Image 1: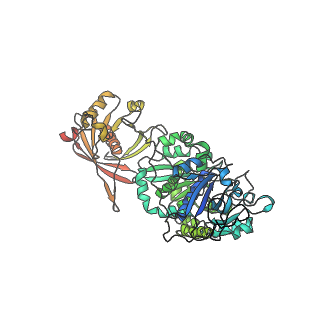
Image 2: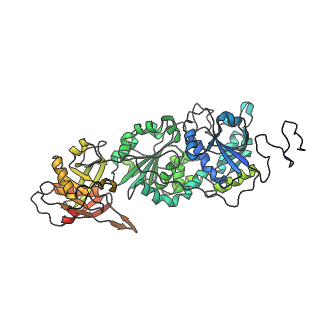
Image 3: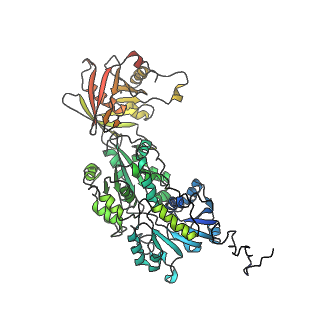
Length: 582
């Protein structure tokens, strides 16, 4: 064809450039490029996925994935690649090919076997921890045991993309040559968090948080983590915090998910999960929860810095007396300045001791270029590729809504505190079985076990899904309350919660049924409603304080939940209300 061989068995391309040997054109405008994402663990892969919008919308670039062997936490990498629909290159094949860029979030493993320009990104908010027994005592990610190869030769890294200038200085202390290739671009994962802040109410709605205060616990991995040192803290908080005032959630480091498996982790946490605690999935959902949170309980894991950077909300620490935390690191600074959690019982007091502004001040020392990280990283990556970036840049991708709790408590020990005239009743519901017995036990019929239903003083039922009522037969609201009181002689009261929120209430010793309507509260342009099941507990307690012979005129009661008082109107039910299909 008139072209000469190159001398190494390949032919010239005909345009003055040499073929690369793997089907790609040599460097130059208009060529295609292949980028390999190399991950040893799921958490490293999640970080790499957060950087990909910097290259999105460009059909010149092919993105491939490979699993680097050798990590105890690599078990979930292949399933994550499959979930995102990525094209997997087996490790042996990956080592035999060349790439325009190799992106990695850790210097560990046999990264040097991959041919191409390497880009290293941190897989956490800075360099806060050292891992005893792995490499040296340097911070993970800055360890010369991994940054330098045999003989002190630097690893073939074209770019160290870091989040803050202080990290360049720390890199220089390890290897001057590595620091020379470092660029401060910010943190792409933080960009997703910041871009998603307007979705806070959507995330809380997805969680079913309502007017409750969402407390998120954060546990990193390893022997000094929250779950290793305080394994019973989630259930102790669930037993302490009233269900109608607080919601609990837990963020666990992806390494623990990989080490144990989600099933084993859920079994270990079963008492707290049964009490309604949300367990975040390790990809994306953890960050959605941080945006939705009202308060944080953290160990020395760097997830707390993302929480602090997003909003100025209270945080407390449970970390102390460890050897993993690096002195002078951002997490070290944060843990020195936020209150320490004394006990589950002192949570509210300890959160009040948080000094506003503390978290965001520390976060500024961990993350530079907030709001610009993806754009700066994009510039650096395209410069290494030798390509002109597309005119339209991909924005940070907002985080998806989290899922609700997999398990919801169906029975509660209810504490009741009434004022002198009995017209105002403070109600605190806690999931049954994890704390002390309350004033009465209430159970949701159709959700709680038979043993709990038989033991309950108050049984309630919520409306069935529409599809369940199309068989041609259903209870009326009053028919169901009569049936329950007949079938369960140990039950004192029954409450049918109608789809409108009205409660059809019947109690022993009274011939008629009553309607209970909880009035919403309007405060600061928001509408807050009480759970009708909590209102039913207030009415049940009110009836228990009265003589069965005392007449019940239309009454106005107050159901107090936390610092909110909800007006309850109690009156005889109408015939239409008693006959409503249920």
